[in-house]
Image 1: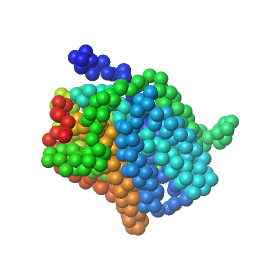
Image 2: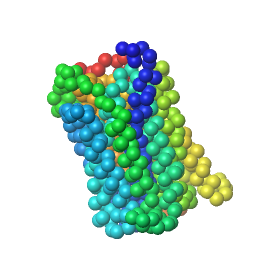
Image 3: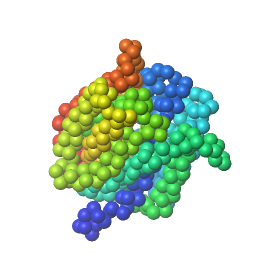
Image 4: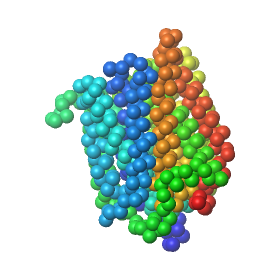
Length: 440
């Protein structure tokens, strides 16, 4: 009771520690999304095929996140229901992440095998990592808490893209690791992941809610069907919006590094900077946007942010056509693009920070894992479809042999249209604000 009276500040330290789970994802994901397409490009010419391979991990995510999140709902151990999954799966994910660039030097088959094993573990642990926060933070403070943990994810992104990515250009020979050229960020990032696991284990203690969980839990299949069949369609509409905005985001993300290199003249070490700059904006905006949503409403903040995303992705499309003609010296156009990515990161961070709490607000303690799984089912469905679609758009554009600056225009137009669709769907959502009761 005292914590509720004192507001969110009483939960800030715990939320920060829980955020180390998000830190690992923010660290690994942008390095993966930036450099794995380049590694695949050594063996594969078609952007459609590269996009298809990039979705293989998302196919695993579509099934594994929901299954493991629900499994962790039902797990009871002395160290909690989420922590056993984190202690086993995150270190294994770190191991296979470190091996990615080394496998890329061997063969395409070796690379795909390591990517498959990496994503088995990295995907499986995501649900338990995410569910730690709503397990421990009251519903009325989850926008603020989600802002904190997303800020931690943003810090991971900043570390990976602005610091570690620069090590791609470092060419020395180290014991055990061998040559570091185009390799070093991956094993170094893996060490940070292991450190984050140690911090989570030592300082985060899950609360015991056995009685409450048993009382409120309903059968899994019945719960999932109930979400789709509820008279109030807010949960389903939020999930539909999530699908659309992830179609936009995931359709562009795998090709940002290639766009930066091919059209804007970025070096290997700079290819990850667009995601890094967006990560900085994400980290700066997440907490203020959580508080803003608490004051003015999550729906209003998300809708306003989606309008911003429609505009900035449309601007990306225009810039891809006219940017090279601006007469900027050297990589000047690349730095202008980084500025636009900063704006994108603010709006994107606002949407992500506040959408998850809207779903959690409709859940009970016993169904948090189910709603978490549904979030990832819809987002990963988009992640499966989007990269091959945008890769095909690039391949079709290349049939007309345009200059490199025009190859990627179509994917930005695609993203803008998807963001517009998400905005229109969100306009029909009526629930998910702090204080709204859970759906029954």
